[in-house]
Image (cartoon, rainbow, N blue to C red; front, side, top):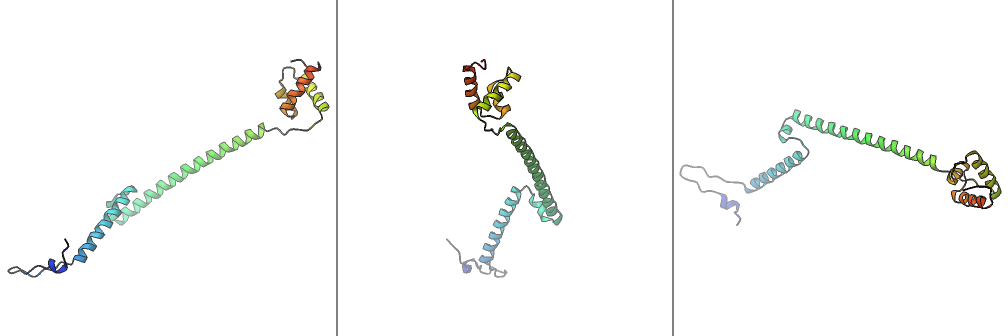
Length: 155
């Protein structure tokens, strides 16, 4: 049921003045109150006390606090980023140390180099020789098997 503006107009009582209520003004006041409540809820979600915003110094302090929190977060993120950069650099260095650029040599030259290496390092493994001589490790294993078969190396 809706009341019209005319229905809200009261009849003068004995010794009273006529009163008229402007419904559109009431509706606007209600909308303003709802907006204010929603604004206060949003402010509370930010951690700013609504009563602090009623004074200019309170608003300034609230904003200063928020700026301080953002700067602290920025410093934390920068520190984490720097730590990640350091870790990536260490990982890149480790990879660079582990990567071996394989040389291409003839089979006879490779056998000669392998025999010389195993004479100097009798307890070494084929993988050690492959790394030291920068030769393909699978090929070095095959060559070592061949050298064992030919009697030049012992297992």
